[in-house]
Each structure stands twice: as C-alpha cells, then as structure tokens.
Length: 265
Image 1 (cartoon, rainbow, N blue to C red):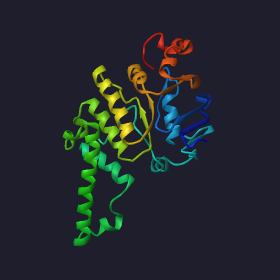
Image 2 (spheres, one colour):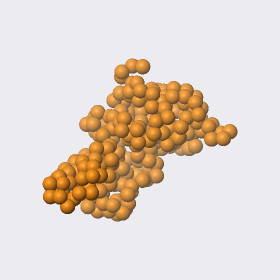
Image 3 (cartoon, one colour):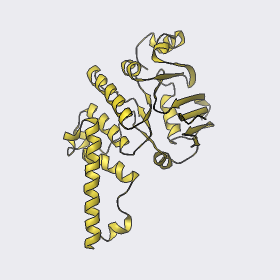
Image 4 (cartoon, helix red, strand yellow):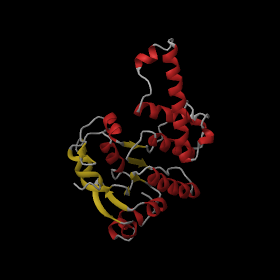
C-alpha cells in the first residue's frame, strides 16, 4: 500500500441477516484528499462510516488506516489512532455549554490529570495543577471554536445554538480529538444554500490547516461538486461509479440512479 494512502477499503461487506447493506466495496482515500461517498437514500453510505469506526464489524473484507489493518479494533482505539467523525443526527451534550462539549473531546484524547490526582484535590499542589490544567483545556477549546467561527457562543448551552451552528460545534469537537482522518456524515444537513456555501469553504480551510484527509457523505450536490476531489458512488450497497465530480455528474449510470430526479443523495 502506498504511503500516500490514508484509508483503504478492501472487499468490504456487511450483512444484517440475509440483507447485505454493503457488498464487496473497495476504494482508497489518498492522504490530504477530500473524497465524497454519494448514492441514493438507503445505499449503505452511513453503514460504511459505521464499519470504518467499528460501530459495526464487517462480515467480510478489511479496513486499513495509514497502512495498518484496523478491522475489528474497538471504537476508542479507532479514535486514538487518528480517526474522528461527525454524525448524520447531531450527537452533542446538549445541556453542556459549547466550550464544555469541546473540552470533553480534549480530555478524552489527552487527559490533563489522572484519577488519583482528582481524588486528592485537598492537597494544594494537586489542586493547583488541576486548576492550571482546566485553564489550559479551556484555552485550547476556544481555539477550536475560533477555527469554526463560533467562539462567541462558548458559554451558551449547545441546545440553544441554531442548527447550523450545532453542526459547526460537532466539527470543532471532532477536531479536538486531533484526527488525521475526518469523517463527515451529512455535515450540511438542514442548512440553507448560503450556509452550505459557507460550510464548503470552512471544510476546505480546516482540511488544509489541520492537514486532514476527509471522507464525507452528503446530500447537497452543490457542496459535493464544489468541495470533493474524488467521488465514490454506491447504490443498494454496491459500487456504481467513481471519478472526479465532473466525470460523475455526467455518468449515465449515476444519472439513472438518482441525479436525474433530484440533485441530492
């Protein structure tokens, strides 16, 4: 496998009983590339993400990240290796503040103090270390909020944010896990055209700033066509086509599958 390959999917299959949600998929995501997986509703796109992040285990096939076979690893191991994701249905700690949501990710990825130190907070030197660590965490969290443009909402509850800003918060929290591969599951869901255009530029900027490889699922064809370097199309869990956005939008098989009706997945 080339050192320029961030992710390799090899013969991936997932069966639920007698139904194959994903069947014999194979593709590669190059390091630094932004790639989109598209296809009609129910095509198996989110199942692919769930397999990469070990929410599901594959029935057949293997998944490689930066040359390492990660098939069968636990979800927390996947995160520690450098893979983070957002979800189609936003999964924030809605009662916590915006900054606390990011701090939970920072603390998960690199805890600033251990359980024993937390138990002995009555000792001044321990208490001072914990306070210093908490200040450092807040400052680091603010940087990620600044990167996605929502620092001004840091002390508001996550549930009070408009839907589009909640999407940005979820991206900030994913970035706080310090990934090298970022999986975005319908990041523009629920956004209007102007918000979608803004998000397109944001993802491009973040990918460059954090040196990320990005794999995304998206219904908004404007975002996909303007952002992605490469597209992989699936239908009924099977490979349909792949190529540049220009090639895909003129592919007769793709047009027949779903682009000929509505321009979304």
